[in-house]
Amino acid sequence: MSNTFQVDLRGIVDLLSHHLYASPRVYVRELLQNAVDAITATGSEDGRVEITTGADALRITDNGIGLTEAQVHELLATIGRSSKRDELGFARHEFLGQFGIGLLSCFLVADEIRVHTKRAGAPPVLWTGYSDGRYEVKPGAEREPGTTVTLLPRRGVETLLSGTTVTELAELYGSLLPVTVEVDGVRVTSGELPWKADREDYCRRVFGFTPFDVIELNVPEAGLTGAAFVLPTAVNPAARGGHRVYLKRMLLAESIEGLLPEWAFFARCVVDSTELRPTASREALYEDGLLDDVRDAIADQLRGWLVRLAATDPRRLARFLGVHHLGVKALALHDDEMLRLVEQWWPMETNMGRVTLAEFRERHGVIRYAATTDEFHQLSAVAAAQDVGLINGGYVYDADIIERLATVDQEARAERLEPTDLTTRFTGLDADTELRLRPFLAAAQRRLDKLGCEVVIRAFDPVTMPALYLISRAAAFHDEFTESRDKADDIWGGVLDALAKVAPPERPQLVLNHRNPLIRRVLALGDPDLAGLAVESLYGQALMLGHHPIRPADAALLTTSFIGLLDRAVPEER
Image 1 (spheres, rainbow, N blue to C red):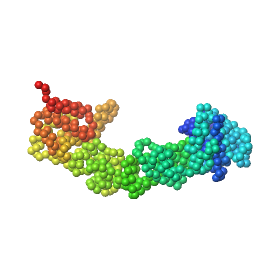
Image 2: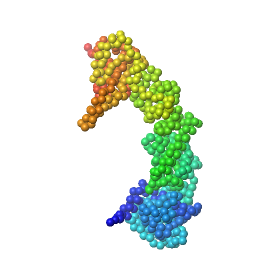
Image 3: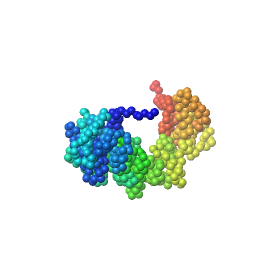
Image 4: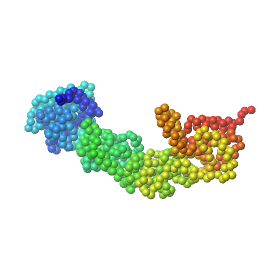
């Protein structure tokens, strides 16, 4: 035994009219769409829509094809059935909307809707719908073919049907329509695409900024034309800006997302399309294969603009990259052409100054980089003194770009510089000096054993650097792992204990620079206690200069060593 769904028509009307649309202001757009569809169905080039406002009602009249009584029942009183709509000729792609669904938006502002319509050769019909789900159909007064929709305003929303508001909304949604639209006798349509005349002025009026540049957009497959306006200032990549989208000259919405790829956050667009599809509420674009193709085509056109800029106006490109480098670098992770553009034109921070990857490769051959800014700060001075070029790969996308360049270009070599790699360039001490300093090293090691740090003495440049704290990535990971284990509960603690059975890496090293005059004076101290305080202070300074995390034990050591040195430096009063 089969049963039919029990539908609460009042609830359906409430759902569609109050929850499908984001704002009640869209009712003007829906009325205009219905009127334009009716005019389009006639094939006439002399379409006209007249809107009349008043205290008691709002009326919108078109000289379109009109409806018969049977069509009124099918289009205005049937929700969710498309077959009849197809048979009546209102489903072809040149039409903007769906007459029945769109009309329901009027219940956002009215409790009663009247549709007085006439099709050529058929008697006029008057359809009256109520927000509680009821409707009635009866013969209408004689009139010319076309349709008049009358809205009786709901209490509390009268301002939305006022002449001022309706004029503003009709201009907003319908100013580009290829038919004449008048509100209280004043024409609001121009039929022209305003961004084609003075694009910069249009951008200032609509988007509120003077564009860095304007890129013409054209996607014939989607019947799409428009313009992309490049922002003159940096924006947050996570803040997706909306775009102004028209479908068949009717404004869909002022802030549509998803038209551009994510990396193109530096542009705002205005487009008109004849083929893209709206969602049911007609406040967003329907995600389908065509929209994917449009997104790819616009991406190609933005990419082409960047390539042309690099070839014809490098200074302007440099200005652009200075503002919007994040978007271009994000694209370079997937696009070989943009990768080359970044390599040639985007200067990265290095220990030799800001240079492009192309210049760095020419000078140093191998692209050595530090993966984090802290590693770069720790290693840059020492690497420079050893004549080792080093790039700060800690900025967003930079390390990924370097690694991708090495995979795309067979001649490019990239190496992440480990802190411990520099020790191979340090000079060891002669045997006599090592023997003489052995007692000092033993005492210093006892001071730092509790911190898990090994003390070594080497000779390296720059001479001005007294000490360097070196920790391998494996050792840093091990320290983080241990800290996590101390904070974990019993369940996770057991898991981490099992993982901790792997042999720990080599300990971090505090490397004292034998070439530094201060270190030589510390090594010559005859007071073991003072020498120990000096080593502890050098340890703390090396941690801070290398931008390493300060653990509670490190902070305590810094305090005690500072107080200890201060106590030794200030004599007691006698």
